[in-house]
View 1: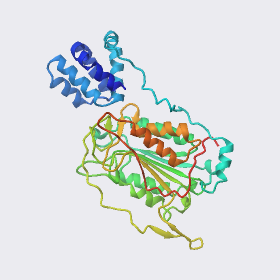
View 2 (view 1 turned 90 degrees about the horizontal axis):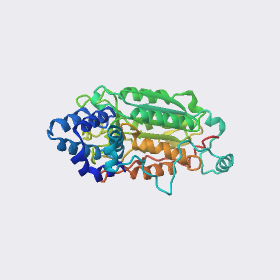
View 3 (view 1 turned 90 degrees about the vertical axis):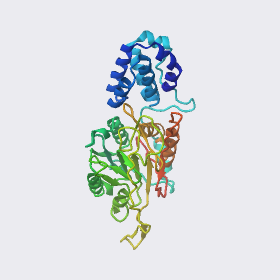
View 4 (view 1 turned 135 degrees about the vertical axis):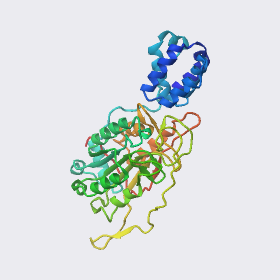
Length: 387
């Protein structure tokens, strides 16, 4: 891990790095969004001695974790190659566990596997026609009215998820930079899409700042909250309001904080530009316990919230993390897990692998663990990429 490398060479770096290289590193890390303006100013203005600036710089970057530390090492190699070698630094990517290698491209399902699973009543039905009518909703908030909330690295998340969903056969209905009200309108419009009658499933992916029970719209301020209640997803796509999706898997992925606990690594999706939670109170609106409805076809009773499964980027009251260059930890994991295993594992198995992979991310003080939520799938859902 790059942060471990910086810790190992910390004393020698502080003793030997030149003032010129410190200034160059500060400029480069600011351009890469590893440091913000306030952090750069604090390192320079609060430390008049060269060694103190060096110490503050390496500690600030090291505490941001592996991604930020690798950027600093890269800049150091470029600015002072001799010093880079003297310190004994390397730029090798951290090795994946020997028992697991990840695929960069989506692995495809065999026709034999598809036929075998279609004959199993414990699996949701998927036909070539239904795959051709797949549709997904992708909402990403990147730029906020309050520019301090802008989500650096979120564009990479949007690109990664759009590419993944498209490769799985989904037409992606994409929205960027929506208010809470506009997110709700986008969900309502999606719930009436003509393809829903013919698809076998849908994905709903929302990425923004958040708090427990809500994601934040781009007009959010502490004085005037702009929020979308996550519960509305289940209402708009439930049995009563969206009969076209009855008996079809509805997969929800939400990349956003759900509170302010834990320390700091990378950039937190908690509605703040730094790592401190905004402390917005939890909404009092709760899901109705009697959310059932009666279908007209033979008076069959169906629960209003069924055939859903959700993956949230962190547990309640906690934060999720995003690298300004590579994107959110959970979205990175989602892409590599789906690429490697979607051809043979159902959605719940994929979610478990994502949770396990993200849980490995830690700086020694902080751990992010995604969580499954409101799981009401009645069967196994396989994606069958390539069929």
